[in-house]
Image 1 (cartoon, helix red, strand yellow):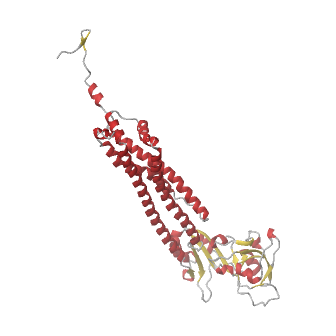
Image 2 (image 1 turned 45 degrees about the vertical axis):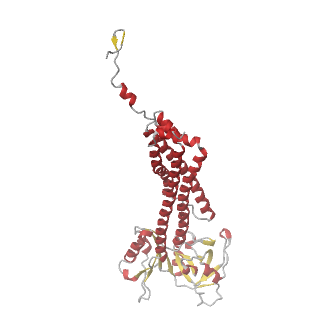
Image 3 (image 1 turned 60 degrees about the vertical axis):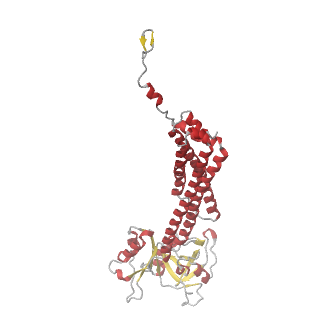
Length: 419
């Protein structure tokens, strides 16, 4: 067969032209994204309902993790107020001669790594009276304690009237009364603005009341105490400086380890004379509660994601059935299976991502509103928020795999026959 010529010069086809013409055209990312969003733009109502399904699933996941987390934070706060990480250190009672804690006990305990704070009180063995006309031997069942300045935050106490001792007033004859002590001594209020208040008699010295504490559920002994500054107790009441009780706060995971080393730390010469309280039963309850809440979070989140994924998959399968004609026309015009797969997979991911963003915002708003209404601390688990966004995309991919493969496998003739 002769080769066509032009002007006597033979014209030969390039050997790679046929292969280049048969090579499938690859869509750019922007084109693929445009095709994937085409179904969303043209069927807005269906797309909105589909996105709403995944949005409800993601919002549910955040709400069922955020609200219990906020409730848990409130519960943990209440349990912590019961002294889950606090230990009390005392000298062993009924000793002859009486066992004493060293004067440097507080400083030595502060050196223990997991210990976060420590303070002390000491029994001055003095009686307090409302006036000098009452029976000198009647102390109303109250205890006069020398107190260090950092006591209140460690025992979760607060001042109800007046003020707490300061670096100035702790050196002078000033006292702060526990709730029960104030009632028994007939002191109901403290003048505002730091004015002179009522006085009580301790031994043979008058002390001015500068504050009244609110009730301390954790330590009822404090409610029945009259608290004097450590230096004032030494100078005015003959206090010898040996603490009676140390209140020790430590990191919760290390409470048991701290308890084990406290006797040797407080009194290295005679650790057997040191008695350390066991951790509060509330600590065990708190740890059990944390484990129970964690399991609940995981179970509810998994159910919510599963429901959302099924909704997206169902929507995409229906979308393939509804758009058979579109698929056949695109295949007839040259679109290959990979492009059809990519179009429907992109649409599935876009729907799920849109629902994920809306659901995340909705879940955050509902969680914050519910926690604020109940006056709980607002806790939004970061893991749940990120899982809401990332999980939506993953769900979109998983839910869109089967519908996209089904659309790509649809023969053009069968699809066009439905027109």
